Image 1 (spheres, rainbow, N blue to C red):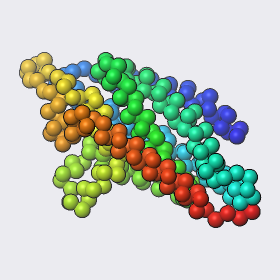
Image 2: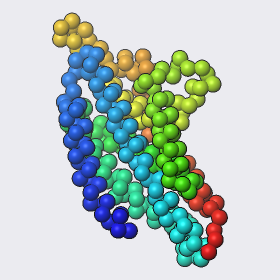
Image 3: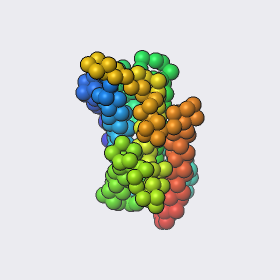
Image 4: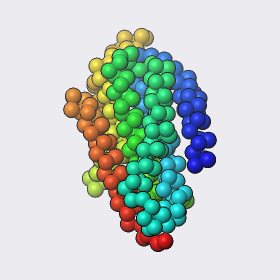
Length: 261
């Protein structure tokens, strides 16, 4: 409890500092042809990556008190569901959701994404869902594996696989058919696609030297990213579905832990 009390006040401060660093690196992106798209996609990928790895430490939520939980739940002090919900909500609000909202409010305007309130709120929603998706898989490993090292290793490896199949570094269509299905379990892919559609659809980029004009929608088509109204929201729906599934599995794993007084 002492560690939690100390870490909560620090979390917003750390978030602000890191958000200022990211905003400074990608400060006010221009609309030049080529670099304008590349820098926006790069910034979006960096933001999604940060939302995943920033929550890797959540594996400790169920591991640090595993022995106490086993003893107290077996003694009938509380139900497993009560313990699970209390731990999850007390962690998510101060340690995950509030810092993410602060992070979004700083980075969006500093980076210079489209100045539109609706797009900002969708941007924030996407990163919040990405945060919850990343946290949910850490909760699952934390509830499944009793060893911090193994849980952190499994979490890191899962995030790396998701980033590889996120669609930025690797063209999914060039992979063998038996590997392409991995794209559908990538939180990074859904988050990046949602941010790309939100930012690039209809945005025009122009090269001042050559006069060449490129539309962001054309880039989305080239990448095979669905950019209609449903294409914008299906990524959020997929992230929400994975959050529900993994949170449920984490709860099931807690219930499966052998209880001894």
